[in-house]
Length: 396
Image (cartoon, rainbow, N blue to C red):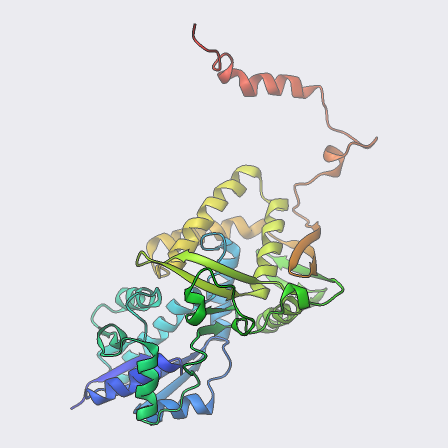
């Protein structure tokens, strides 16, 4: 009797070849497809899995869960890896792995598999999550052990067995897309000196070709979560899609990054995340308005750790759970509205207001409305610097 394995199946080159490779070795392959906003799994992708040898294809729409339980927590934490990456791909992996394990339980499978390479991040994210949720499951990683040494060889294999694929040798980009963003790697991008060609980008216009007039948008948050755009309440999926389209039209959300992978190597990635870039800028500015200095500074440090946990596949860990409790406590006051100006690749905050704002015009103004007691400053400065008096003297 063949052993059942649940494969995290994207429909792309690697996982399509994985289906055939596993089936040829006697496995009964269940191809699990998660819709996280990359577009509904097409009939062509499902057919591709079956042509490759999948016994069953299971599709789950995880978009709402993705937003509520993964994207919004990351936004509230302001998690950005190494100051550049909004973690779109990384955020989707624990969600996909969680459901992959669930499918394995329901199907009675004793093994799960993925199509990640031995030098990538996703292998860590899938496998660590699977082991956290069920350490008894066997994990199979065909790409780490199979005979192919290049994507060209995989393409030849797919063509040999008449597996319909979208990748060609002339356009060998590896692309991962979901509703929070897109990552692009491989091909000419592997040379870090090469400027990304125009065909690298999927949706965002270059700043040079972006709209010639600026757009203004207001975003209202409730306890750290965006709820309204331009005054209208919008469901979460439509909210992200609307900001994605708006940002893309104005060249917002492009990044070309050299980043530090989990396994220790550097990689070159191109990212697109227009909605994420807009929402991050707005949320960060709202926190500046409503959080006191010490809490704001401490939370910035937490954001770095939170981003590293996401990037490293450590979503279902005690530290992540503990940080969520802290972050959710900070968001009780993060309600208000931010106005932004989008123009030629620039996303600039031009207005902010909140019922919890700590900015007081009567204290900040230099006009006749000033109510700040400037005489109190002298005593404050003396006490503030008391511990350091004389410490800069040079010994003779």
